[in-house]
Image (cartoon, rainbow, N blue to C red; front, top):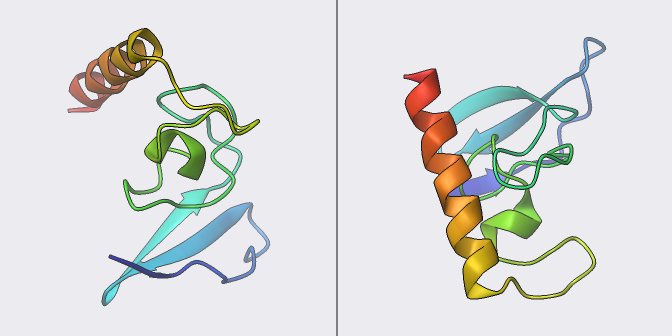
Length: 84
């Protein structure tokens, strides 16, 4: 569970997100695995998916269609398998 994500950038472009008692550093300019836009902030899905995609919304507030959600899911799974 995301407890806090308010730590300022520490000078090297990295931010820190706290999940319960685990601190995770991440690059807020890294692309979201679903939409490709900069992540900006950590989400409940972690630091590789932006909060909008985590909730199934476009950044302008429109809800994803089923086809868009399926395509984003496929991109996420492909990226996750590539990293492993």
